[in-house]
Image 1 (cartoon, rainbow, N blue to C red):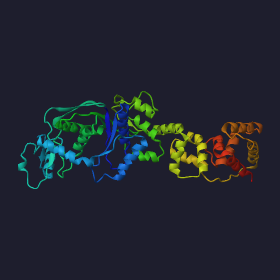
Image 2: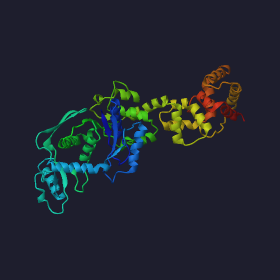
Image 3: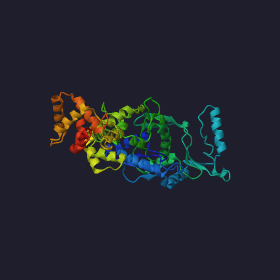
Image 4: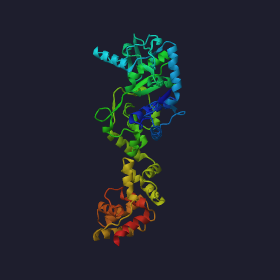
Length: 453
């Protein structure tokens, strides 16, 4: 069974890149009928906050990414991590290192002077712990093989190899007794039964160290897939200057979750020339071999167009519910008015914020408009004709207004423009027929008659 995971650190918002990683892992698990697990890597106690944990939960829920089983909090498993490190010490696969900060700094300086990458030189690798200076709390280091190379068969990057002499004896447990990220990740992935680790390619270097820990513990290694990072439209690594970085910001900017997911899916994954991909299609089509090796660019113009597409296809009641979450509570009469007018509103709105602005036509208090005598006579004719309409719907209203335009020899655009100004007091609105239906017969006629007083 395929078991994937998303393992964010709760130190801030749910990053857009993290959201894509979660989506890809979720799709892989759902595609194969497996499990998608959530692990909160909260071992950095100073930076990890309950607010950040909740931001991760709410962000994933908003995107429609659900997880199986209860979330695992890494901080609750430190005993297990340290226990395994000590087991490796007893087996001679790890050792206690008593180096002082000054000695470590000296090693780094010496390596730099020789043109080598700064790393630990194995000073305590084969020394007897009895030689340790008094009062020094040791770290636990893993014995990395000095010869040969470590090879990774990555599902995205292909075959990648690193010479073992480029790796130093990494720390597994710090001098204060806390396990390091390197150890904790491996132990948790093993204990959670993770079969596939899909994450950003900025973790590729770490993976070679993780493989060393897996080998030392005698555990099978999961399959890895390292995906390129997301770049901005200018081709540089995504940063604050490119715009929103957190999922909560996209929600606040009025994007729909299905549009954001569709956009994220296309950042590094493809299915032919398909751009619009439903959640059901994504689950059916997703496969790791369609992931690209090149960094993808986040195009906000494409996201906006995608959002407009999903806005137009969304159910009116759903959009009304989302809209009420932005504007707050309103009267039942105005809710019904918005629902009647939603077809016209969503056709002209690419985000929920645009929908909110457009919806103000049906929410703002009515302010009578002044028109000249010629237009007033035209409106009087409109009112007389429309008062007799029993079936107040778009088709019938359009037929009546176009007949008036022909019979009175007034351009239809002129009729619609004057009525638009009276009904809404603005030039940019849904169609005149959308507004007449949304306002209803009584309110529409009340507004039209206001210019005749």
